[in-house]
Image (tube, rainbow, N blue to C red; front, side, top):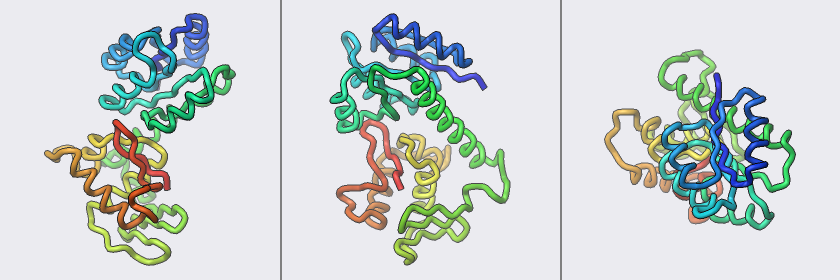
Length: 241
């Protein structure tokens, strides 16, 4: 499969270098030097990955990322010029999936790109399996997932904390299992609704928020400061384990 990458970088020399190296790896590449054009290209072309510089003229990378996260679940790798900008990305939870601080090696950037695109492929394969395109007995649907003192048993449809079974509703289990199977990946509320409540479900994102709150009350040491099911601002939720 050929993956497409959108490069958003106002340093033309760096932009051209990125485009050249990505194309050498077989990726289809779009490029722009400003945020507003980036939004249009992302909406029109739905790239598999976006490389997004923070310091853009006019609309900066933080704002572009915030808007993108309201509309698309495309992975975003942010390129930052100063170490403190990394702190800002993490602190504001703009929804970036990864970041690199300039100057960076091309080898490292290509490795990050490959890793993020592999995440996309894993989700694609697992969603296909959920739709019945793969029905092997070893399907992750029935796997036992262990995260420290938390165990999610797909075969028994049981959640255990410190070895003790939790009283958990069927839809809470479905939600927790779905989040856990995509550990470390920001999942939008719309995608969660589609996959957990099925494609025909006619609801709203408030349903997801309520069920997440119920789960946090059962599996988080401190539900008010969640560390297992983390809110990704402007997107939805990410399971950290």
